[in-house]
Length: 91
Image 1: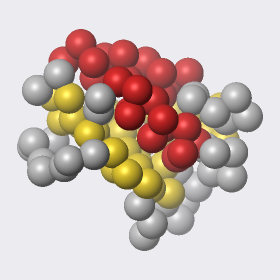
Image 2: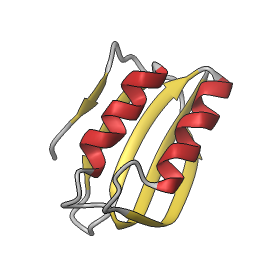
Image 3: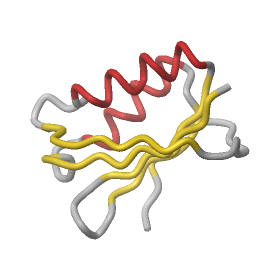
Image 4: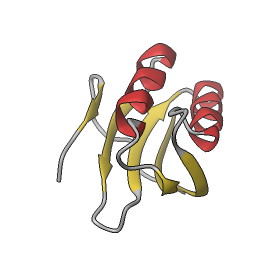
């Protein structure tokens, strides 16, 4: 099991990025959450089996939103967390 925090920068707010990220996560069976940051970036906390997480990260790197554009993606390994689904949250 791999748990990560992704910080995604680029054109990632106002283009459906969070909702399409949720669709990718639901399709792959990834658990966690995604939210917008005040600086215009998006943060994703996600966990799943190693191979599935590699696929998830690859899809995020390409931008799940056709109107989006990822210019920077940082990956931080984090401790496992409790989640039963993937959700869009608001901060």
